[in-house]
Length: 84
Length: 118
Image 1 (cartoon, rainbow over the protein chains, first blue to last red):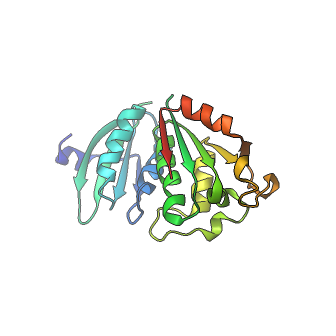
Image 2: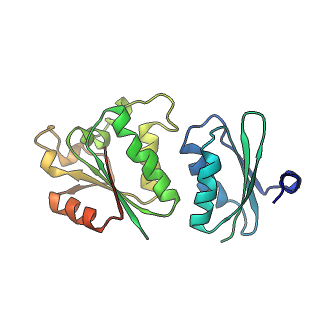
Image 3: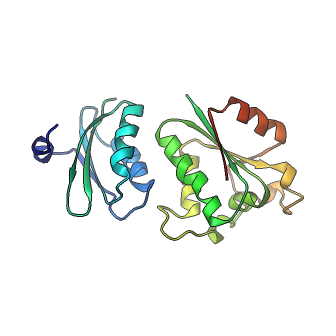
């Protein structure tokens, strides 16, 4: 998705994992996705740059859809769609 | 399902935390996780032991990480061969830890797709 499309999304769940070191954001995403309905979107806020690589790989492995990332001021907004 | 086995052989913070950091990640990626504690690594799963092992900046405390991997279904094995070496007994261990001999470790290692040592 384009940055504009991502910015216009209304996520079903927002997880603020800023300030937490790896693997905190990943573990919070793992827990958080279960609270989103199948087809719903989770947004993860992370100040840990590695989350940008970890969440797409995690999503691909588990079968969820990584929609994209928006870079913000000192953190990233990462969007994942629950697929199962 | 692929399996990760981690050899936890030390209670030094920089060696005691990575098995849980990487192991919780493995569970998040739906891998099976087995943690094998031996030598001073047994202090991680000794009652009260994890409270004394601290690493500033880590995402969680060691007791929190232990709870996370237990909730995730990890198998925690304590090496009975090291019990007399570090003066540890089965009743000294936290709940959810099984005693294991060397044959169990070797068999787990043979089956595992990934083996890490710390």
